Image 1 (cartoon, rainbow, N blue to C red):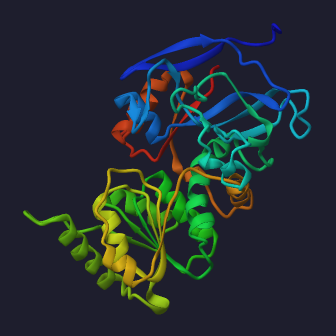
Image 2 (image 1 turned 180 degrees about the horizontal axis):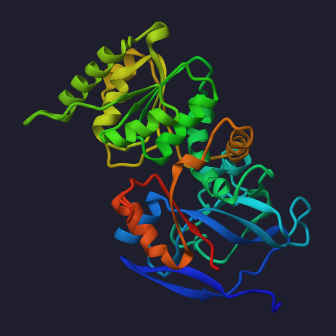
Image 3 (image 1 turned 120 degrees about the vertical axis):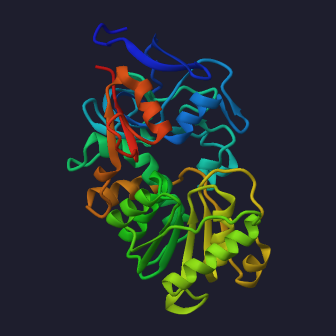
Length: 372
């Protein structure tokens, strides 16, 4: 191995709340792969969940695993058959490598591949290391007017693009309501604005998040009422939905109807509210993860809604995300609220987990620099 390599220092999760820094072997490249020196990594809620719970659903951490999957970096080395990238290129990393041969991959839905190797999803290592290898076709060269921080934010932006553009097929002059003003919800608002939304209604239980949403992309912000003692979730969601429709003059048809609802919260009452507020013939997309929810079938059937689940991102989503940023239609910079050195990764995770930094400022996205 060349002496030009530095130690592949990695941030490793051993068990719940048990992490360490470890020098791992530098990955060996296949002909179609690139080795990237990781420079920026955003912390996602799933990373924090693995740290604090050791699992997400059926994905269980059974062996030490490198965390992180929202990353960008500089190409360090390329495989012999790689023609479109060279050492020194700045790239955004798409952290899921599919098999490329199954029916889902061949039909253009590679994100549903059963054999997907996704960074920081057990048993696969993530990107919080000095070096990370991946196929060259999922390392996207960044335009000169985009920073490496922008590049790290392309992963969550691609989630938003997949939900709003690819699945909901959002069109100019439509109205959209988005539940949850966390990073993904905020980015869904940004994509809707970039695609020419007439109206963007943000719904969240935290006033400071709604205020940020309105300064960023939302035209309206709705703070749901408190649940009354003894009130069922179904009754509450119907009441809260009626309040929203009254406050903003929402109807089920025409120009005042909501065409698309995105739930980025995963909360049962938000799911229920979404079906109540959406307009006839509208499209509902579930992107937020949460426990099973009781869904109101009446509105779904009578309004003949299109209901779709959203899982990560697929063909074209990264390219559109990069285009929206490079053309100035989505500004990612306001979302990066906290920055940490690689040696302070634990503090970055704690900041994301608590929702506030040591400075007392609310967290939207924390970024960790690559190893020095």
